[in-house]
Image (cartoon, rainbow, N blue to C red):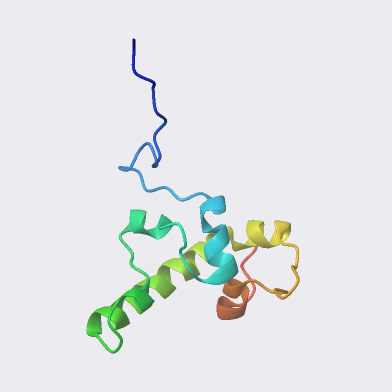
Length: 103
């Protein structure tokens, strides 16, 4: 009897780390990469590194740069669909980086 075909549990093409606007949603809301989306770009969340280390400072700077760029590129579309939730009137990215550029 043939074996049952299993669906891939990970992204099919790991060679192309293209992140869609939807991939940034939880990050824009909370500031955390709960699903490891940014590991495709080679980023590590700064809080996972030892406090006070040079690696943590570098990771924080890279983290902020990448998210700021993503917010500038995808933030307008995200905010067009954003609906305030109980206890969360404004997403984290809007608080941290200000209103997104139009787009």
